[in-house]
Length: 365
Image (cartoon, rainbow, N blue to C red):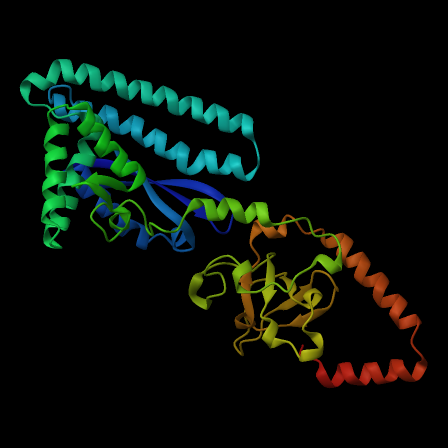
């Protein structure tokens, strides 16, 4: 047993950006460490509401007396750096449209690839005569054998045999074999027995190669979400926000996420028919206590300024930060106030009394 560092990337629903975290585990090997770290994810409250969770890599300290482990460690460090940049830095720069920093991040990746090339060359010269396998794909070779076994169990015998042959070639430093294994873990597919075999669904947490919490939870969807959000500074642009617009899991009572000073989305079906309008959906709570009878502390509508007591369970959750940052609440509040004043001044006295009675009868709050 020895200590390993396992690095993860994820999209923080609360902060609206990609972030990273590290876990330290005691394990028999880097493969054991990779699996153990997933267990730590379950007990991490912050990660419970994260999306696009993936492992960037496993690193450790190694002695030069064990050449295979030492070169594996050097390669693992560079590969982890590459994955962190690709899964955290670059997507965040894409979100903020900072192309200069994207270019800088890609330059660091190129340096790491150059370092990996040097590691492979030195390891081949020093270790190949003694049976060392390419350290730059050491982890991939381990999981490739498990994938081949999975194909075999499913009756794809010819494909499994083809993959075993590629693995054997790669272990002998065959450039084509090494490239095929590299591409498999980059693209999720490989050419076997005359056709492409797609194995990406095995890269999920419960799969052969436990790299991602959900292999189909793609970071591109979260980057696109920012691009789809447009500035909202007029009431006519304000949509009726709902569950798709809130931080994942933030509406759950047991989520542990604080509602205090956060913009909240009220469930539209909790409003009377005549109040189901966009300007009645967004609220903020000044405190985060709940009374024993289940009624929340005072909440204030961020557009109309109306205050009310609203049960926590009536909120769909916390508005996503990338949406909140695009809303000009001051402009919307001014427009609402001006529109309300004009409408009130244009009413007859009798109409005003009727409206007041209707509001009192249908008032939800």
